[in-house]
Length: 176
Image (cartoon, rainbow, N blue to C red; front, top):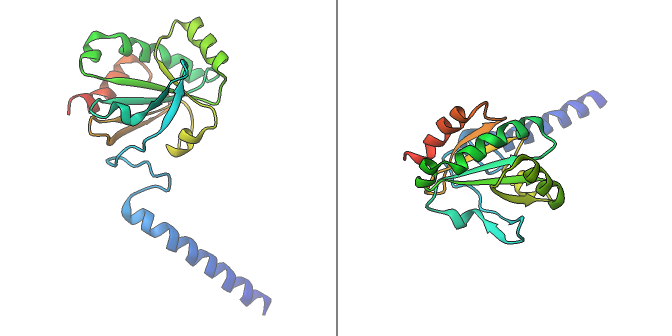
């Protein structure tokens, strides 16, 4: 009798899980709400100057969002590539916006890291990791490329291995 009750409970639990998962699989979306081809979720975070910056402020521009932390080796390796593209007049002419989102570090730590590495990009501070969770960031660094119409076009998990790889990915959102 206990075996039957156990099997029935297990079957009900399995049915409930399938009922929840199948619509997500059919729709081709993830529970995170961040899906290629869909509108990128808007957010607002404070930058290092204490100003609130929203993703929607940049509608009409191609945007690269890069999640990072100073303790992350691959993040440290790719930051010069981001800076190089940020400074390049050809990329500026495309209207490209690079938003780096620091995950859960103090303002002081971020500023020290930027100063030590001579980096001068826009840094937004995700101190409570709400935006990191909103974008379902699995590991840092992780980047999201958003087209001028606000649609998420590409997701890159891990660091760009070089500026050429970064520029190749950026063409997805700048040559539309």
